[in-house]
Amino acid sequence: MSKIFGMAELPSALIVDDEQHVRVFLRTMLQVAGAGEVWEAGTGPQGLEAYFQHKPAITLLDLSMPGPTGLEILALIMKSDPDAIVVIVTSLNERETVLECERLGAAGFLLKSRPKDELLAAMKEFLAEASEAQDGG
Image (cartoon, rainbow, N blue to C red; front, side, top):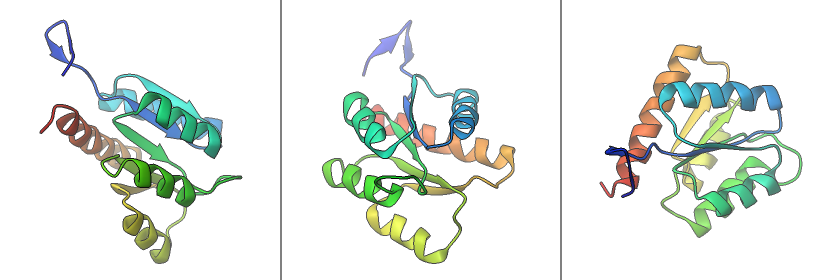
């Protein structure tokens, strides 16, 4: 585990969403929740490239994007890195979609329409989980 000034390194994050205003919002929420470095990608291919380049502690992934869908990206990430913490952040709230995300290995499912305080609390929980995994616990 690397240390910075005697403190554990903050968990890094990747946001994959085709809407810039959503990426800005999620970046702000992650920073408030305690994330370290945060990378962004606006397309599926960019998201995959960024994931494999940076190996973030947590990935926030939108489902509805042109090109490879979020489900396809999730499947690719989980196939190559079964321990990845990928959280689906979407406006889609269909039972079949949620079940498919769980089947593929998503760590969680957040609706963009949730109140900010609920999103923030959930992000803090996912970052804590990522931090424990990063520290080997």
